[in-house]
Length: 640
Image (cartoon, one colour):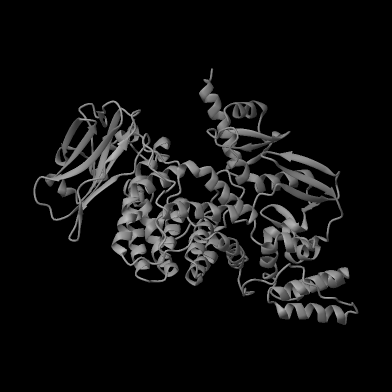
């Protein structure tokens, strides 16, 4: 008799056969009852509607919307095709938004169908389908995009309501600029006798600078005997010159978002201090904030390195190519990569403080930031070097977000536009807020977009003399909600106010983000080079509730310097002082991680130092046992 595990494996094989054909939305008839029930019980399927299921990761928690939002359009395509076949299309308004590059998951998807009846179909996470009995346009006016039947772009412009030009002006303008010639739309206008709509579209095209198309519409409609009264459906003139020669809607969309959103940001700008005269002092402040910044930025991404993982890496039991659990443990390299990337960001900031154009500097340097962010993962065999070459080549999704990042081709259309806008923008705070937001809106990389966005934000803040500002992990929900609102509703106000609040607090010397012991810390840095040296940390205040200091590893460059260095840990608790010393040459060395030394005791576990009761202050110091020309060391530890 087969074991439960063998039975589950058999059901998973049936599910995999469907997934291998690209099917994630599954009908009851496509799986046997036994397989379906077994997969539901073990969390590999989620029921969406009666008779319809979605394949999901079995570790996804109840209430996690990620799988639903990432599969929304695929599910709707399959369900609607099964239910209505060719007797449906989505609404003109939603067709236009998709043509304009807006794939945000809608609260309600409107379906036009001759089959009916008028009905509301509830879907997960407060989304739904609403079917409206309605005659369909001619077949030539409908196209299938990613499995969903929708109106063509010209047809959607003609049949959408005038309210869309006010409510979704960015979508409307981006869509209008995709029309290359009036002939694309005149056939439909003349065929339907749409004289009022012709006047509205002529005004809309003129608003976005397409004078020739506007004139051709009026001339041809009048030649056919129609009286045309041109009206502008937009509330205001297009704020910036746009190009009708763009191959996709995305570049113009980014330009429109920038200029609409900067109006809001301008109302929330903290006064810029200006480029500091004492650049060395500014850079020293940036360096001193590293530990706080790394802790919060990595925690926002929910990275955590476990002692067990370090032991597996140390012992050689870690095989990222074979062990699925270890594949997920990118956390082990996150802190090292963050440190390496931060060094490159500081180099960029130094250029900016020397009056180089901030947008141009970041355009030229951000690729190096990204390479360093994931270089340790390449060294450990988790990623390949080619994974870091350029922007992503696949679609990516954001956990729990209705926003669908741009497709891989659109990334290449829009990233040059982002840097062009950064170069041209006169206000440093606008550069910081919109630089961060639009970077993560585009999501140009498969991973690391949040960290890169925060690096970009601080580089832009530096261009106005604003201090390095940390987004605290305690405000993660506020931060993510503000980004979601900006992405889905095109409303930047909450995000602008949030960043302004953090920057203003930092300017006043009362930063919101502070270090909270009890979780993995980013490494403390010690170094010596031809210009300067740092051998000792500032004293770290540790709460009375923590009774253990766990030492993990030291990353050291060059590794040969271990013969000349020792680490000293000084613990002060009231009148009591304890001192612990470790010669780096005595620490465990693994050639698979050629620049890393591990603290392990005789049982091959991380070293734990038991701390005195009450509050204490800990100072970490590097001692030179003999002369060493230069070195750079990072100490990783944790309070328990």
